[in-house]
Amino acid sequence: MLNWVLNTIVVASDGAPPSTDQLASARALARATGAKIVVVHIIEIVRGRGGAHPIHADEDGVARTLQTQVNQLHALGLRAELEIRASADGLPAALSAVADKHDADLIVVRRGNRSWWGADARHRMIARLERRTHRPVLTVN
Image (cartoon, rainbow, N blue to C red; front, side, top):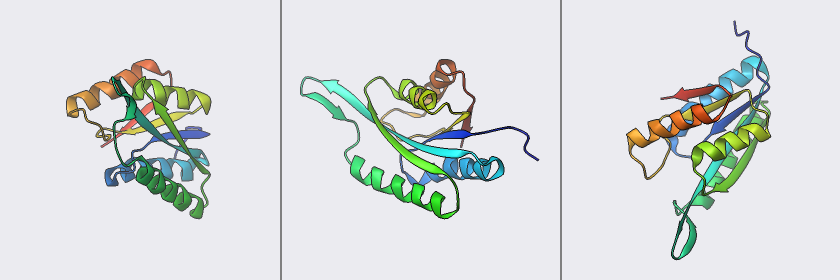
């Protein structure tokens, strides 16, 4: 029996097939608590001599995939929304800001979020998020 009160769960997602694990965890928690799920995608921006550009080329495809996932959550009777935010400040800062905006009770991330970093950098990113936010962070493998 779950005794933890959750009103809003922020789920970081890149739309990749492995991200369904963190969405499944959030879905189970939302069913048990009635929480709203906010699926968040951060468009990572890099700045250079040629200006600022997204790191990943297929951001439109990612947005379509994520909207389909949110629609599936609605079909299951869950409250859900999609927020896409561009940031050059890094994933921890952007996720923390979105969680603050929605007054989230929990942030769900996947240990292997898509990035040009290696696995060690992913673990460091999660550690930076945990230090940056006062909100609980659930890391899903």
